[in-house]
Length: 181
Figure 1 (cartoon, rainbow, N blue to C red):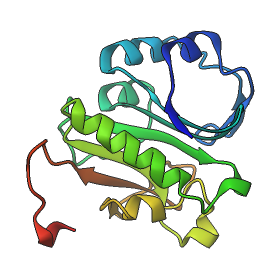
Figure 2 (cartoon, rainbow, N blue to C red; figure 1 turned 90 degrees about the vertical axis):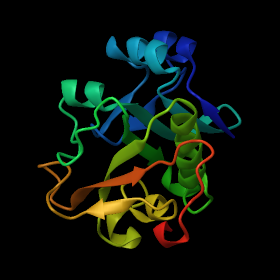
Figure 3 (cartoon, rainbow, N blue to C red; figure 1 turned 90 degrees about the horizontal axis):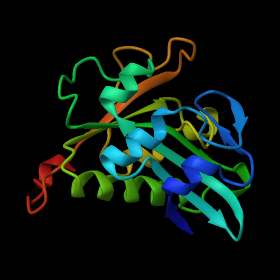
């Protein structure tokens, strides 16, 4: 079951360790004081996928202005800082791969962004095929939603196979151009 991360979970922790792919470490809570501020400003920071009481997946997002403050990779071509949300972490336990969890969390995030007036979403992904990239960095689930890969530079300098990808969101009520899909 995919659910939004709550304000209480940010303040008190998740009750169990979760793996943060972005930093390659296990965490028990969101220790950075920025997360409550982000939550209060935009109404959320991401989603957790659970099976029973166990966390099996996580997606974390934050506005581009905060991503830049903490030196996360963002697309340099996009100057629409106020209208851009950055997915900073997407993680699904290996044994729960290929069950639509990553796609479900991405879909929830896109709906969240549209409702709050964001016009662009960026993410850092691995451009290699999914079997090489691994479940948690693959571009594959993002491609399903129309994200475009930017091959002009690495997403993270320390991960040469990482790239930025982005999706321009339509405003509520706009119709998609069939050529855009």
